Amino acid sequence: MFFERPDSGEIAVLVHIDFHDQSESYGPEEFVELAISAGADPVAVVSGTRQRPDARYFIGTGKLAEIKDIVDREEAQVVLFDHALSPSQERNLESVLQCRVLDRTGLILDIFAQRARTHEGKLQVELAQLQHMSTRLIRGWTHLERQKGGIGMRGPGETQLETDRRLLRERIKAIQKRLAKVGSQRDQNRRSRDRSSVPTVSLVGYTNAGKSTLFNRATGADVYAADQLFATLDPTLRRLDIEQIGSIVLADTVGFIRQLPHRLIKAFQATLKESSEADLLLHVVDAADISRDENMKHVDSVLEEIGANEVPTLTIFNKIDALPTAEPRIDRDANGNPFRVWLSARDGQGIDLLKQAIAELLAEDVFSETLYLSSKYGRLRAMLFEHGAVKSERFDEAGRFVLEVKLPKKDYLQILARTGMSEDQIEAV
Image 1: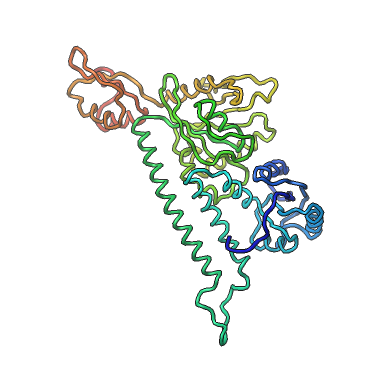
Image 2: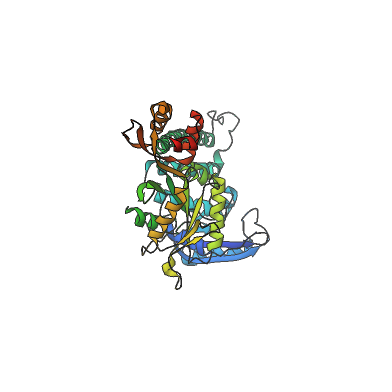
């Protein structure tokens, strides 16, 4: 940190305020889970209602006195707000409460900093932290804000605050440059998968919906999975064999949450591309959560923000072991296509149904056939090889090329269009 602040501790007081102009109301339960995930020990939850936030303290003076009494009595070392606070509000609250104050964004950033394991994940978290910190630098350097005039009082040309801001900007630019390089490497890997015609399926969903448990159950991987918010930050890719389709790439991604800070979405843009450029999304939902429908809406809004709302989606109702009457099944639309699968990743119930549903949905987008091509179709043959679509080749008795091909249907149609051919011509060959 560039400024001195009280040391943070585990004993925490949580603050949750409902405002009358909110489009939807929610309780403090999720925020309590966030605090516990960060390693805090919540000793009290202070709640209340207001017309609008107070400009100076966010809360009223009466509520502030109530929190101060609890902090003194419990010897709390941090007060967590389930809201976004301005830098001045944080500074004013810390001055009165005499302990560290964190808002919802700061708490989520702290959790992300604890969970990041890969080099890319750590860079993404550091970028978000620095961007968040840049708005709060003035708090620790109020005594050095201005250059003083007069004999013996003239500054060095740059105040400490300006120096720190410049260093911060330089560090942010350096991280953004390194993340851009990582992003280009990810793009190259995705292009390689596209050339090899391997479909990508990405797990998305609200945090703690069971994505990593499902990922481990389906692929046999050993990704860290726990009953806590944001157990997974770093994306993990594994191959999974699906009957009738062959190999697919399954991606486990970071979970979403209500009021996910925008700067986190921007920082994790490279990671979230695994979702926006996937062939199919598996929207994992905690079927036993009473806030199930609201959580699904929040996930949909984030998917729209990252440009993944147009990707075909299969909804997975997970944790049916917590529902006494639920059974593993596939729900189908009016055309008979799967749109929802009920399963339990923890017990393994319904995993076979999930694979069946994935196969049905991807089969519509995959062209997998045996083609018989005479020598005059050499350009078509060359383009199929160029796309990595030819799995095997032999000759029949008539001297024709017999190609076992597999590639996305749209790519196959584009190749035919470029060669000036139609599907009927190929079938007649």
